Length: 467
Image (cartoon, rainbow, N blue to C red; front, top):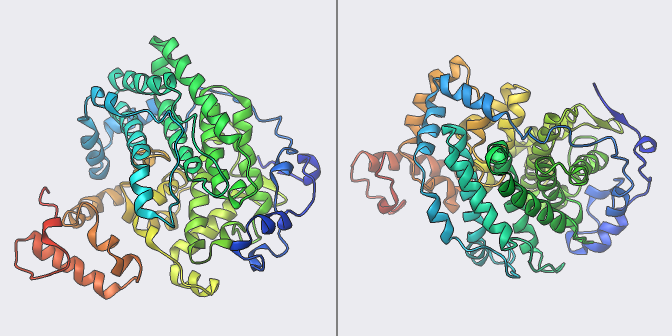
């Protein structure tokens, strides 16, 4: 059933917010045509959305059915899926996680674009947290062993006791710590949702402690307000994602509705072609940020669908999430054509990073599509440490024909570097030099076979000798 919401029914005041955004972010170009004629939604207008019909209907329903998926994993015969299972069967001891420091003191991070190396170093504790909870959840899905559920309970319980992620620096000019907490919170929310029932069954006090902390951290984080672009763009959708998954797991309607408001805002603002105007302000990165926004919107939608709300088919002023997805797929399907249409070369580094395609496993499982599969197949298996974890393992169901090609595909990848040297080298990442990449990968083949390729590039010491 399609839920059509006019501005009157939704209680949305009709007023343009373009002036607010332009005043808040003049550096992004007030003259940018992406804002022409767009009725942008201010944070104040979001408060007027009538979302009272949305409540948590089933706190036990995370973003996929854990028991059903485990049952399927035990009887399937996919080389790709079995490779993922084998990687997860033998994990590190939970004791090793106790040495990971809790981010409880007030902390700040440098900016991602102005100081990428410093940012990566400062962000490492967040990555370790996200990897820890996501991998523990994956091991629980594969093995069904309570050990991993208990480990998540103990690990998150310690962060609850020490008020992890509750104290961070936030200033409009230095928001990076605020941004970093976003992904760590939904990593925790996704992982907890997978083990929630197992913990509640035998350790209700531990579950209560973790849930109280998750709820408090999510509300504190989403309660910060800014007039900068991040008030309402993909970062708002990220905040909406942790609010949604944590709201469901903790049975909190207010957090759930915050997530729903992200979907409503995106649909109200989207251009007729499906582009998101705030992401179109990003110049050479507009394609990346359109995809980035789609990632979080799809996960929110999937969580809400699991609560019984037909979000994918919902329309706001005749606009649906499917149109945003179609625009994004058009761009990913032909990046060169997209760049010509945009009138600006696009930074396509993200096209070689599988984590940015996690949403396609979720969307493709619900809406099978040759186009989605064509784009995502070369990125499998997909793991996103914060948004969904092992999404290929959780959502992908290969057809018989796909299984026939999996072994050949895996074998073809076996020569590649662990860090995918050719794909991440500036000659490909920045210049998209196809001839260079073909030569690079051919020489990697030679090195793997023990031949003297006399390369210079890539460094033979970087070759993965393990496979």
